[in-house]
Length: 80
Image (cartoon, rainbow, N blue to C red; front, side, top):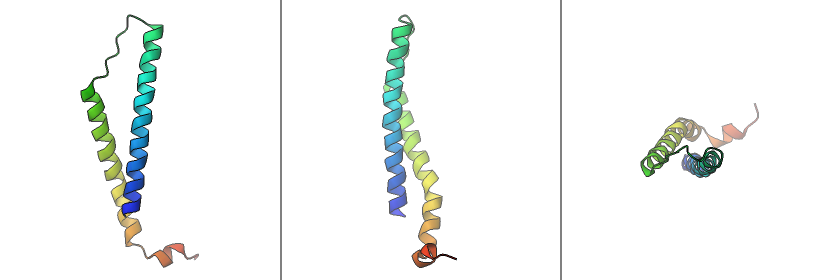
């Protein structure tokens, strides 16, 4: 169960970092194209998105992790 949850958290953190980098890049592109347009990305929005990503990632991985933990490894690997 721990492996699935750690994998989910790792993917969430990777997606969060990639999303923040692409957001910053998009902001710079918009600023280059439209210099008078303001795009505000505050720290509170970054923290909210971080919390949302981590909570949804863990909650979304709990059920599959519980299902995988309840299975016998021998039966899961056997071909039927």
